[in-house]
Amino acid sequence: MHYTLTKIEDNKRLDFLPKYFKGVALIQFEHFLYTVAEEKIKEYHGGFWDFYEIDIAGKKAPLMVLSTKSPTLTLHGFSEDIVVNAFTASLAVFSMALNHFMFHCSRNEKLLASLTNTYMTLNDYMYGDFEKKEEIDIARLYQFLD
Image 1 (tube, rainbow, N blue to C red):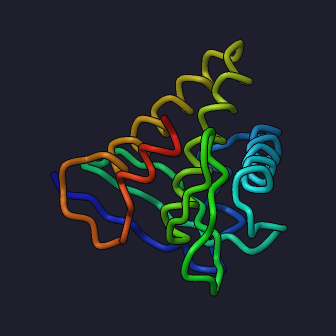
Image 2: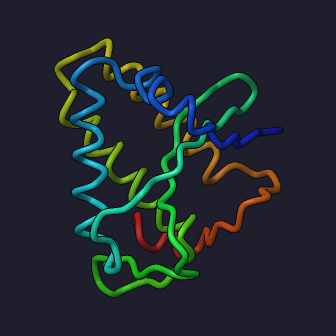
Image 3: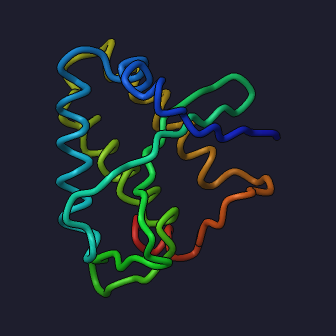
């Protein structure tokens, strides 16, 4: 299976997330993400996020990755802290926030269907059996999300 991960250019940022999160859902999801990041990443106190689009055989999903100069970030796990690179930490909190947001939107069937497709594409990317160019610590990602 083949995938692409494309960084969204600065001049296209404003139009990117509304493709996936319509209307007020965008503001609500961003709030979920920033709250989860604040709670789960020890070094996070706000910051700039880079936008990416995942494409796996035509199935697309957004991904927000924390832009940081720090080589590692500490995730507050359920039983212990886990030190990972910034890309893995971003995947972890983005996935967790999306999962929580889906539960929050469970009464809106159309939005939930769209979010489910996004979540499944994100999971295919994280756990898919193909070589990734990005450095993802799968073992620690599993440990954190389990």
